Image (cartoon, rainbow, N blue to C red):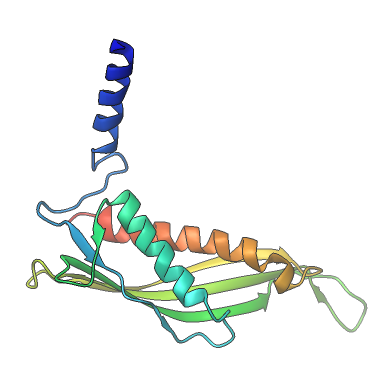
Length: 169
């Protein structure tokens, strides 16, 4: 029984600490607002902007331990899906008249605006975040899109989260 109590206390201590990953949240900040991203990317899947919004909300809620709310939030993260494109990357030799692409690259760009509404005098920031996923030229985008967007979303969220919560306040 005492081992169980010890494990419970240890779990409570570990999960209630803000600084495991160097997260820095000002005292008194308890809520955040992440409105739906704006979709300005031509050719992006129709729900990508919503998927990006929801995954960022989840990351802020789970890792920063902030409550997501629309009513009087302390922080606000506005996002815009700016670009979604596939480009040919590594060339491989072809015949005498043409070279072929060995790799294709899916690139997603989002613009984020961060505001500290609890302290309006504090300057926020605006920044574009870019992530890409390379895939074989013999594969179609449709065949790799789910995997690619999962990885891209995870990496974008990590960059955004680190900029918002792991840098000096």
